[in-house]
Image (cartoon, rainbow, N blue to C red; front, side, top):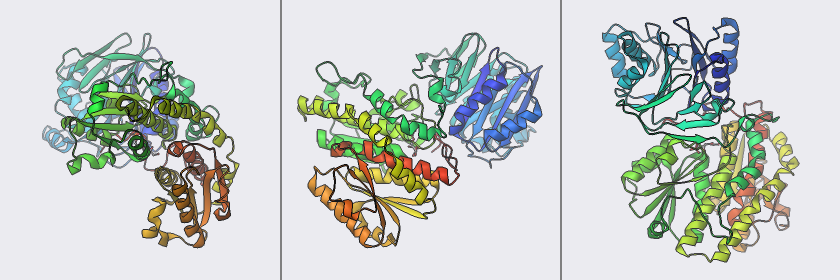
Length: 614
Ligand code: F6R
């Protein structure tokens, strides 16, 4: 939530910052603003709405071309998304410009304190108090980095802060606690940002900042300290994707591009996971096999789409390992006094690695001495940093707010974890594990097959563009697919959509079925006869009540044809892996329908990609 960029170097800071904000706009798009320093002054422009509004304002304001600046794209928490509340915020003396991601929980008290000193905040934000406190410090002669440390220790909550001081035109100072911040290390120039996408055009060398650290960047230097002013240990890394991955590459939406990248994302996530003999080797798994053998319960914590990946994982992990596996919304986990301990493996799934709900749940699990493994797509992010082990998905940057390739690669990582546990604990024979791995490795081709035949689903999106409501049904691993299909439609098309366990329908939701209501039904592969037949019965039940049925079933599944108004054919894969192909038409349906409705598919209303507030 909220995207932040800071730059110092020989380029025009304004261009670097605005381009960076464009790539971070997925993090929030309620308002945007920039500030550059020139001739001992802060020059600032900010505007409510998307960056396009800021562009217009900038065209009229001709800010100076200087080498020091910062910018922000906002997902509002405190204060309405208007021009005044937009970031950057200036200190009353005009010296400090500040941008912030997160929430300063004790801002009201600090605001009162400032009022007592005669400083009135002009905005309703929690952020402005920090700008004012920094302004007082620099006014008293304290250098900006020292001022930042002094102020940070007084703040409660989550924050990434980036500040400049008009009387020190060579320095950008940033700080973080519980919100993301990376440093981009260039040649004669340096960057700070919420995400490497902001500076990937200029450098692929990055430094991840730890908790409670302050960084000062100049053209030639990067200095990281703790909030106490001590030198901090930092880890540099090379970003393994480039600018083209962060751009649309000819697609109308990032989401559509990301849907079509899924065969590669799945293949990349599977790369290098076994040795020549087929033995799985998950080298980012820093928990010993001996420890894994002691695990007697798995708890998966995640939010939204990532949680649905976890629901699929439960079926696979329990089936392959016989370890009981629970799946819980991360936002609920720590509030119910969960039973976890040293023999519990908590699996935190997060594409961004920054989701506050998941992070807080993870911390709670660690306090209970559980072992925590992260499944994550973002190198250097907080969730893997705070976990005992990590399986990275290799989806590349996911920019569309609605998760697509993130979901598929999370599924793959969950399957890998399940198979690895089965190998370590001996609950599957080696040849069974090898066979499942071979099937997983054939999935990119199966996904490509689905993607090469999307005419039916594109037509459906056109036909249903005015549908007021759509239902999705599935059983077993088809149930989370139904939930995910409904979530995609809700968040992109803003229409009522619900996913149900097909067997649960008769316990209430069947009352929703009325004439011509579109109902998607995910039919399991025919191999599991009882499961298959039960879902076919559920399909008949809804059709008999007038629903328009859109049936996703295997290529040669003729049994369902009489009950389908529209058939979407899926490649033949085993039951547990079917979500990898069954979700694709539902992603395309939501993307296309939202597009036809004229919605911004990449930036749906009220949402932001990286949800760093609880
Ligand atoms: C929906 C979606 C969200 C995220 C959720 C968790 O399309 O993208 O539901 O899945 O906010 O995000 P991460 O995986 O970054 O923790």
